[in-house]
Image 1 (cartoon, rainbow, N blue to C red):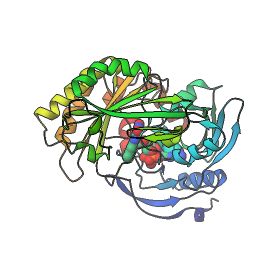
Image 2: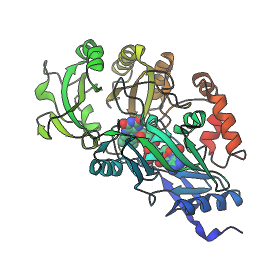
Image 3: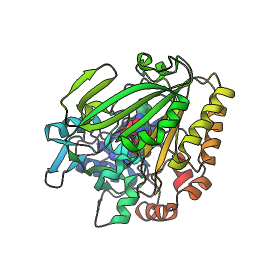
Length: 416
Ligand SMILES: Cc1cc2nc3c(=O)[nH]c(=O)nc-3n(C[C@H](O)[C@H](O)[C@H](O)COP(=O)(O)OP(=O)(O)OC[C@H]3O[C@@H](n4cnc5c(N)ncnc54)[C@H](O)[C@@H]3O)c2cc1C
């Protein structure tokens, strides 16, 4: 007989930006892996679906459920470190920020990070979250092992001895079970030297290849209007602009590993890796982001810029442009494809759908794959077309969870 009391009363959940919500029949806040297993098996024995939220930073419907909604926010911290291999086994509810702090104390660093660090590790990795760097893959590529709770509460251990299972589970949106911990490949602690400045769009395009080649990290925000940079809280680099333009300009950023000690100057900073990566955002945007094969990156950016300037001049959010190298996770947007990511946003409360749909059409024309956690228009047919390993993924998903306990409506449409 299962212990039903282990599940808490259900209730309302909403994501960070407020465009997704659900009313869950039950909630679960496990304090240990054992409790997590018991919660999952209890829920499935009552025929409830089981989903897990990270920090709710996805814009898409990848979390909502009417069944059991878990949060692993009490399952945090480093479980073990292998200093020789530079690997750490980390509880899945640990946030990127918390991991960074632990790693700093242990003279280690994550290989790469994205724009924010508030996501839970399992949440960020499960959607293929990435940073920017032409030779740096997405964050989930650092996963060398995982423990995943199955519908009956058993634990599936994934490691490098089962390479296909590892490739399937690195980016799996919670559909293969609930991740309780992951083992990550890290590197020696490093400081990053960040420099930001402003360029006109054409100048940015001219220096694009060289900056991508020369720097560990390069990315930019194209700002169509003067007020654009405020939407993403970007610093005002006008003092460094060559032409003095304030609209139709690119806010540029490069970062490189340095041996130099921490420092802060105007538009320049050196600090421990995890202290440099994150930037500030406020929940005032609904974002779409697609990964375009790198060879089409500049053309894709030019086409979306033209669309905004000519057809949607009221869309003043920046276009963010970043690099991610290819990897081998079956559902990674970067699967075997070096890519640039192009993102745009709509303003909450306005009807931005025609704009986002037009951007989708342009980017899909360049062979793009959407970020699973950001707004997109993928159909099941698209998923089949753009993910060569989708049938292997679905077969595995059905073997592990034949009754589809770990799916919700959105994911059933795409991955059943
Ligand atoms: C302000 C902002 C900045 C962002 N910056 C970037 C960026 O720089 N780069 C980038 O690529 N993306 C970025 N994103 C997108 C974000 O990284 C992803 O949407 C990420 O998945 C969110 O992580 P989360 O912890 O909030 O997970 P959630 O959104 O809560 O969940 C994401 C998925 O993970 C699953 N999940 C969570 N925990 C578990 C678990 N323990 N086991 C199994 N499945 C689990 C959920 O069910 C869901 O399917 C940004 C989003 C915002 C709002």
